[in-house]
Length: 98
Image (cartoon, rainbow, N blue to C red; front, side):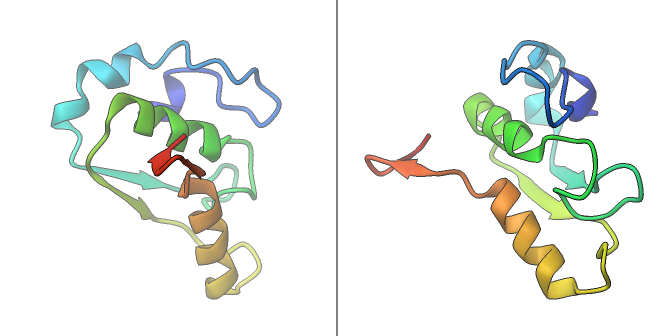
């Protein structure tokens, strides 16, 4: 649902426009599951800009769980989890996620 709220292609502008539909139902979202497309593999292997989605979720104050529901693109589960962590770990500045 969320990635359709704005332009999430890797080369898309970094604007957060289009997050209003997700923000309107934020308190009803208990879990956000992710898998890149095509192929339902881990973030960074397809077309969706998951770091931008992670930042938008943080900006909205999303308190829930984000789960990886995907196949390891190269069969390496550890690498897939590393890519997931890289996409959903926000930089911290002054003790706060940026």
